Length: 359
Image (cartoon, rainbow, N blue to C red):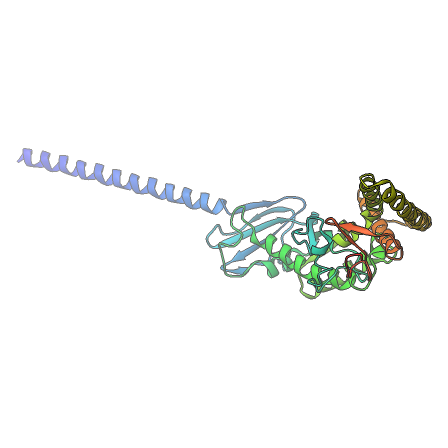
């Protein structure tokens, strides 16, 4: 009998120990779960730095904070992912985008006959006087109203949108600005001559900026345009070829003189007489052209004083203006041009040349 009582006591003590161990295990498990939940909840704490703005999406919809959609500098908390998505972005930070107009691959290799404008294959031109066919502009913008910006460029309900370093709304914004600005710039350029745009004779940049800002405001993008600046300008090949034409006149005369040395004495006398006449005529023509160029150069110096563009690209701009000016002078002269070993005389305008072999 005493042995049975002793056995029961031992059994009871064992049960108590097991129960105690189980209870301790459960308490430890609860503590670990509470710790994990606490850590998970704590991971919802985030900080918005100075110069940043944040928007929180809860179950695919913007979660306001104190009546505002946007959170600025400070410490905040929200349910961790996947319940909420926090979008933090720098605002009032300048972003640059280059707008390249009509940048086509140059397949002319300097051959005027392959110039798209000469061949009438190009239905559009950048400026009213068709003096420039390629322009590049630099647009600087910033995010001013972050809630409008996110609503326009961040798709609601897509919780994976903008995750990590991949922020597609930036690309969406760049594409929108490029599309809108391109149409406005082309429209404005077509109303003015190149020289007016390049020398800021007309308030072109301000006009484009106002139209662009109005369009972006109507679309409620939250984007503010800060600056618009012309950075590149390129003339048609036909204009560049015309610019080089004066030096080619001397090449033609020298070739004629060289060939005459192989003739008989009689032919030499006749040929040199013809060449001398050519020299006199060409000298008169070139002298007249030089006078005209010098006159135009004085005008260009005055224009240069009113130039408001970036000094780094001023030389580039003025070269385009010289090309235009000299090409117009050459058009009114009697000087012949050589292109691809063929002598050509330009009969019409410098942009749609009507060429034929000299008889």
